[in-house]
Image (cartoon, rainbow, N blue to C red; front, side, top):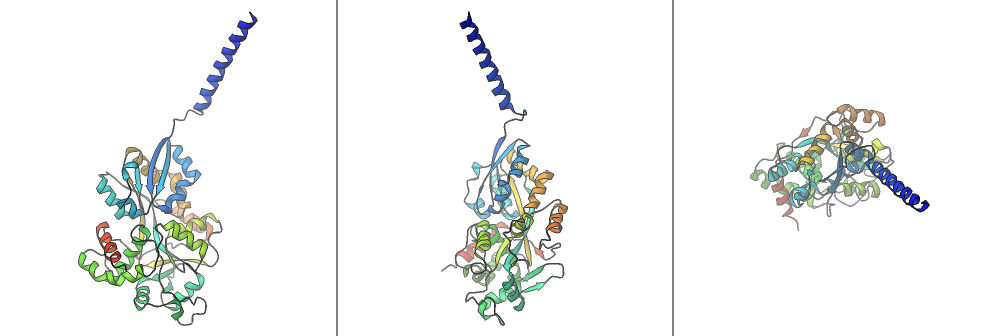
Length: 360
């Protein structure tokens, strides 16, 4: 009898343990998260890796996993059948993906103007050369036309008059990512192309044939270029003016560190704005229903919009960004007027192909 009682008790205890496991696995009753995979421009990876961003998606039943690629690579090389959404860093690239994949809509939840990250001694030399000036609105502007004049002359840093701070015997050139793979370089090319084209958006093959030889030195004479904007910005932060005296960046890359107060932006670093500049509108192309949910949440969810502002992006809620600028005294331009549109994807691609063909 005692043996049977022991068996019964063992069965009861096993049942109780099983029920406890089931209840424990159910947690608060939340459904299993749906995994949604996307491919994004590398500059947005820190945002998607943020635990608070992951938690915000999880509250909507999503676990968003991302791979990175240069924004132009997303259009040309990435197998998009593996993903629920693509998230390049410009409207022209997104519109090309939308057309190629037959997507119904796109979402542009945040944007970032193109900017130049440099250093105080370089800024002083650029001011002496007439390239850099005070906007009168709390930020400095980098004159693209005057810069292209220096490029055309092959000016070197040690040839700038009264230069006692940066006597490098190399060309005065903005560093960019690779125009063949990266959107930030393509947006830079859009801005200098606009100026070289008589201050007009490039719209014909004839215009490209005329201006490509003018623009080629600004691109090809840089030497090696990183394939992603995140890699080139890491070099700027770590290696200083010796490696990268001035770098074309997304404004958000620089401001994200200022807002975080993480010490990555040193006192001698400077953020200035090209004149004209181009807005990089980070645009989600949904490739499935779950991808559409991600696009909507990034655009409409107040928590995700606030988190995006924390990473330096300007969102549909301007107060979130402005509040961070005021709190941190970040060197952000409050009012950018000299902004131009990039060419269509096809014209920009033709310009890139033409310049690339001139490589030695």
